[in-house]
Image (cartoon, rainbow, N blue to C red):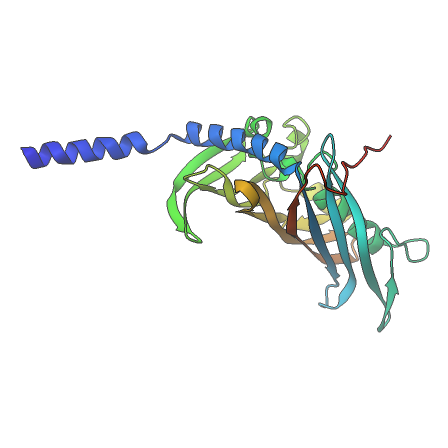
Length: 283
C-alpha cells in the first residue's frame, strides 16, 4: 500500500508539473514580447546570402549583404555595410555593388532577389527583420492558428516541447487575406525551462489553384523557412540563423531555385557611453 501511495504521489506531482498547451503558448507569447523589447538594447551584425539557380543547376545570380542592425523606436533599423553581387551573362559573371541593380530593362532575377531580401529579411516592423507572420508565436499571431502539443524531447542539450501549428482557416488562397496572412504550418521547439523558441520551421499551407498555374504559368514549390534561436547576453534570446529554399516558376519558361540565408552575430549591448545612438526613423 505504501508503494502504491508513493507511486500515486510521484505520478500526481509529475502531472502537476506538466504545463498545458495553453499555458505553454501563453508563456511563449509573453516571452516573445519581452525579448523584442530587450533586443532593442543591442546592436549586432547580420549577413545575408541570396542565390538563384537556373533549371539546369547553374548559378544565375548571387548576393552577399552585410548589415549593422540598430535599435529604433519602433521595429528595427539596418545600415548596409558591405555588398557584393554577381549575375550570369552567357558563360561569364558580371559583378555589381549595390542592392536593386537591374540588368538592362527587364531583369526578373534582379527584381525577385531584391524583393525576397526586403520582404523576408528586412521587415521594418520587426526588430530582427524577420516577418512576424512567418513564425506565428506572438500573441496576435497565435490567435490565427491552431496549436497541438506533439511531445517533449531533448534538442542540442536542452529539454524542449515540440508544438505543431496550422491556420485556423481552410488553406485556400481566397481565404488568405481574411485570415490575416495565416498561411503557414509547421512546428516549433520550445525550451521547457524558459518557454522560448529554440527552432521554428514554417511551410506554406496554401496551394496555388490549378487555374492560376495553367493561365499564368506560375507556381511556387517548397516555400518554407526555418529560424533558430540562442540565448546570449544577460539571458536575452536572439534569432541567430534563418533560411529557406524553394522553387519559383512563372511565365511558363521562367524557373528558378531560390535559397536565402541569414546569420546574426557579434551582439553588443548599448550603454550610456556608447557611440552608437538610436537610429532615427524615416520621415
